[in-house]
Image 1 (tube, rainbow, N blue to C red):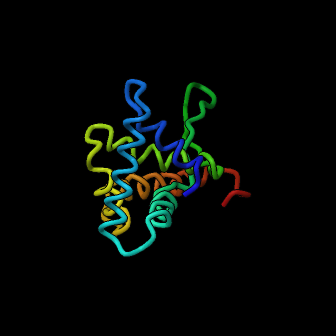
Image 2: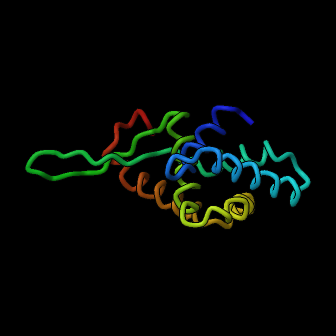
Length: 136
C-alpha cells in the first residue's frame, strides 16, 4: 500500500490529535481484512478506494439575478482519492470499529457509500447541459 495513502487515511481518522491510536486502528482493521479474505489486503484496500472515488463534483455558481446553478466538473486524481477517503471516514467517525466491515461491504458492492456516489453521478449527468461540452 502506498505510504501517502496510509498517511492521508490516518489524518482523516484522527480525533483530538491522537494519530497513534488511529494508526493502530487502521492496522487492526487491515489485519481483520487479511484474516477474513484470501486475497492480498493491500490490493483490496486500493480496490475499495478506487471503487468509491467519484468522477464528478458539482459546484454551484451564481449567475445573474442571484440565480445559482450547479455545474459538474471532473475531479483530479488527488481530489478523487481524498473524496473517497472522506466517504469512508465520514461514516466511520461515529463507530471506528466498523471500518473493516465497511470495506467488506464495499468489496461486495452493498455499501451505502455506493448509493451516495451514484446519486452524485446522476446529479452531474442531469446538470450536464450547464457544463462545457468538451468535458462530456
